Image (cartoon, rainbow, N blue to C red):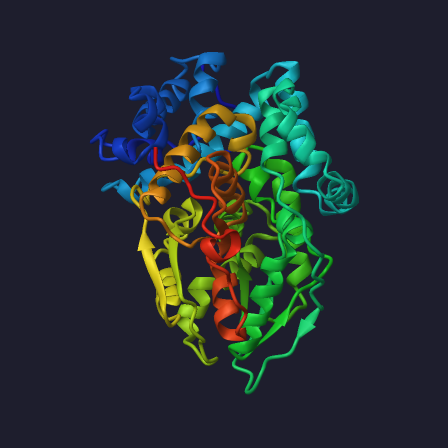
Length: 443
């Protein structure tokens, strides 16, 4: 008897696409770290096949192999057979969440995450408390004293990854284009980014407007559902998807812009996720067809605004869901290379995940830290002034790893560098900010 229920079990045709060639092995972060077959994409596909045939039980060891998967989809880029591993891992995780009983502690922690991170109103309520925690000096005291180490590892990770919260930058519902209007676009605001790192959205709006776009940002929009869908929480994820589609129904936009790799990959999958919903299937297909990452869109649109020099050495880190799920890899580099006097540096192992991966760095912090430290060491060999990436999760993960190693390197969104170039905002180098006193150890 199969271990899966009848609601969208992992598709047998996708399972059979895998020819077990092994091209995915060096592309898989967990296989690179541990060298274990069952913690590789082809090993996990084999486990899915066994469970579907009733030859494997959905027990704790079986589930652990899927919990350890980052869902980074690097294997899809490496796969010569075109296996849709993303659909397999999402459907398997949905099966796990419906049919496997997690420990009480695991349920409690995951429940806490899902009640906070995708909920914009909850994050908004948390904001004043986090501002006090950071600005009062309490955060510094707790970290320096070592009290943070008394917390369980997962709660330590949650505290370590908190962004430094600056002034809230409100985005108007409609921002007019500068000069001749070229496009009317919508912008996804996100969840954590919207409330805790609003400067990214503000920079995105300024750049789009400067490039001749009227920008529509419906404030009633919620989470896109990506964080939940990637964690197997299908029902609430689809509720968010429907709400997002409803929100943009009357926005009358030509393109819907995302500036977060994980969110962008999710909204592009609405057509697949809602394929069985008679009320939303066609609308989801139309919505997904309009979605583009901001770098993807700007590269296609072409520049209008003048770029000013940024004399910086910048490392670009590829967000996994941007490069592997959305296939947006060349475009961010194209935008950065067009900035005068900015030297773009390429990081080693660029296809490997930094360990962020949705909620992975919270539920699997030890493995996430190993990957983040590996990424930080790769960055160290290049001695850059700045790190750029296209996803809020990657920004927080890499910044935490760099800080852990004593680095003062700033991690910015790609769009923030473009905004600084267009609007003439100065970005300080590491030496200018700290007089060269703080350097990342290359050990």
